[in-house]
Length: 117
Image 1: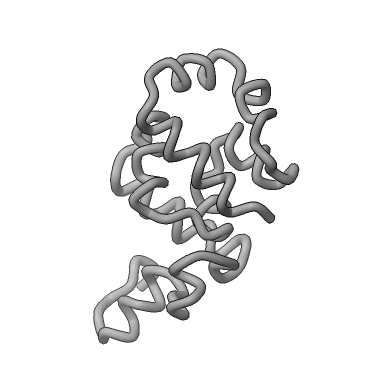
Image 2 (image 1 turned 90 degrees about the vertical axis):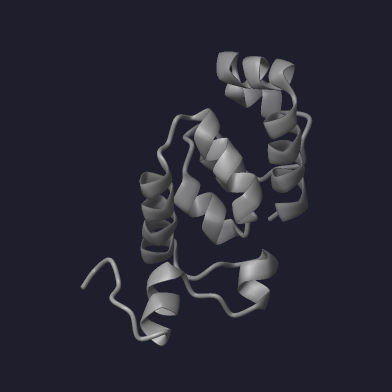
């Protein structure tokens, strides 16, 4: 896994309108210069917000990527929850290092209602 390169790509994509145009025209080709594994490439092409979150992509970077794909805020949050449900806990990055297990676990720990109940 190459979390650094996934986040580097997303950071550059979020800031560069020409890269955004190229990405929207041919996603796979734009990703070639980055040292990414196939799981990361597929998540960036789809886009699979939940998997990218589980891979450890920082939420501040990821939310701009979601916006590029016109994913509404509530749907963005749900896709992260779904990612944890489907792919398991966050594997790397700041959320993994902090022991963060997703929005529902955090909400339950605070004694609040979760989205599932």
